[in-house]
Image 1 (cartoon, rainbow, N blue to C red):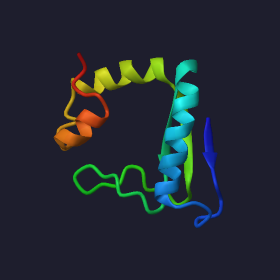
Image 2: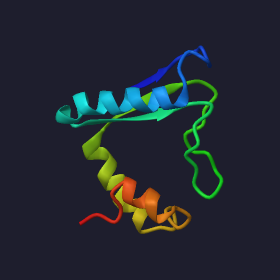
Image 3: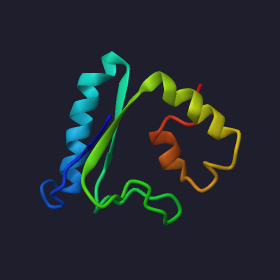
Length: 95
């Protein structure tokens, strides 16, 4: 599911993150995970802003589909420019 707010200034980047944190607390028991985007989002990988989109929004995905995809990416150079802090935040490497 993808949700986009057409009003660029309707919600700030920190408010978007807070909203997604609250949403994830509610939907995690359903096996779902939400990721936020925002025009002012600071998250970046080696200078590439991967969550900076033209409008505030979020994506909800099935958590069980994310781990196999992430495991597959670990076998490539996808994560080579991520900081240790970013990797830790996303639970990589996994135990």
